[in-house]
Image (cartoon, rainbow, N blue to C red; front, side, top):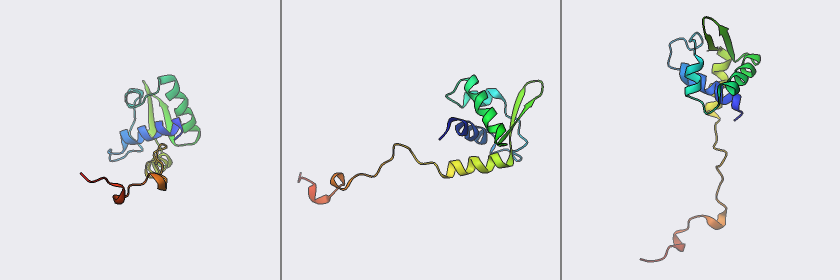
Length: 104
């Protein structure tokens, strides 16, 4: 998954339990605590997400981020389509076979 979509997923995880997740104002602090990336990287991710209209960046007394309805849909799709990149099927030669078991 691309890093900026990881940030979108993080924002979604923060807001998803709110009755109105698209109006929840997420703080940079909340995002930073939930991400392995530094603030400069997160800012770039937010700019990409804002350009895709998946989040809105608001400059209030402090910066606040809200997820859009499209961002919620995208985050849910990312979560539902997640597949571990390290996953692979075993080849047939390495599969378990009861006949290969040695008696105790």
